[in-house]
Length: 257
Image (cartoon, rainbow, N blue to C red; front, side, top):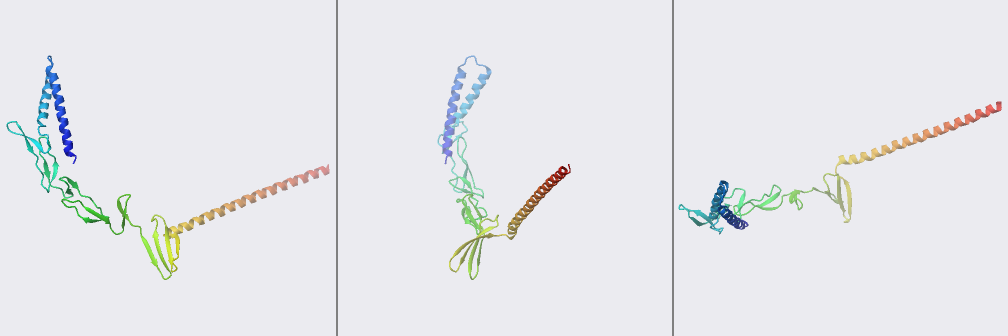
């Protein structure tokens, strides 16, 4: 437990502050012409120094300082909490230890109340949380498997088994978000065949529609290309015919002349 060490450190710090303030008081008192503000500061520091000195007479963490009616200080042993209690506040300075009973979701470990572990709804509870022991969690319940990455039980992927006279087929879903499944088929000759198929008929229809759409696009593009080629051929033939007619008309004019 690190609390006793922290208490010792705090005690040493208070002692250092008290010594430091005593030097400040000594310097302020030696000033001859001091103002009212300096006088008030010296008085305040003096009272604070006295309170700090009074707060550190019992250095042992097993005792606390008790102020008697005559003003004297008596070191009193700290109260020890019972076995069924835990420490709410440690003994220090002028304060005694404060004990309390653990809550319903707590257990006692070394006089310290700790919150019980929660197994959740996916794990088997081997032992419930008691006053002196934490909850003991077992493995995952049926249908769940332990995932070491997220440190929790996740739902087990379904496994489908089918048997007939000729084949023994085991189908396991690889990914539920995808329609693809893998199948291992064993026949009576112990020959193994790996088969990949679709698990959802709706998704299978989509896989059929996509190639049909692509085929239709190819046909339309082919027809467009044929029409374009036909137009170019017709245009070329028309241009050649016009050139031939022009030559014949020119030759006729020359003959007439």
